Image 1 (cartoon, helix red, strand yellow):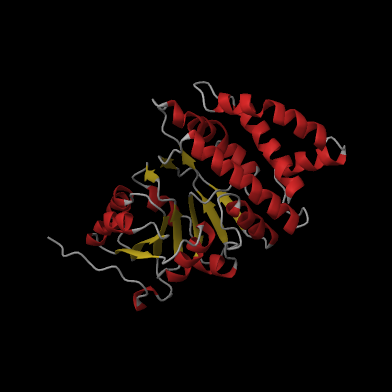
Image 2: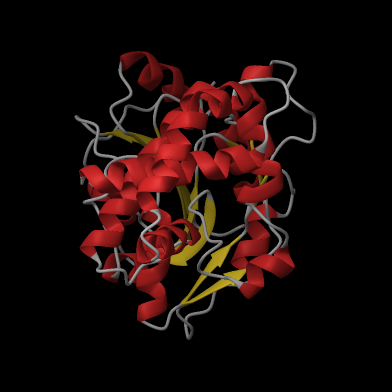
Length: 317
């Protein structure tokens, strides 16, 4: 039996130098044992230097103790933030701690689908080109039995991750941080914006930064399965957080970073229809939320919900 390793808070082991593969997983209150085991099994077959590094974003002792069992696996490590730092700062810290020069970032609530997952990424890396590779994600094909998870599942399967052809036509707009690969030098030079602490849009802001500096995002078909499905209540909370972030980003960048939502809202303000639209939204809000929490949520209602929240908070910001 392999003796458990201790958690290393700031080891010399993590100093950066050229090597091969660092698999990096930001984690908050999520059981990563199955994911790390899958990755470890694949990595062992590659015959290249690798590490799997999990960074716990101050989840608490329960989650840290639960995930500590990954330390029994070869080249697997877990470190922890003392305080919650947010998604952007946690990814930046993982990049700084990474030992090797090729990085694969994965959300903690995914599972690996393809036995060739790591190999598919490794075959794409090039020392000569500065590129980011996005493998996308899919949701479980089975409709959730409990309706409280239905809205997130429907949004994820129908909107969040379009097919490869659509993603290739809009490579920056359709990028997400759930499953991507990048050279360490890129993310150290162009880190995620740590001013974005709450949920939403830190991935799109980073994609826009890459676009401004001529770094391509290459979309490939190498998905993970997104098993972390939120309840409708939490999903709507996250939606509100993302909308509020989009307002802050839109104002701080003077409109340079645009989403479909900000473009529509700008057009409504240009036509001076914002007060009428907000009035109508308030009349319909309770009915829409009941629909979104029900057995047959309408995704158009979700889009109207986003617009209404945007108009409401724009006037207050």
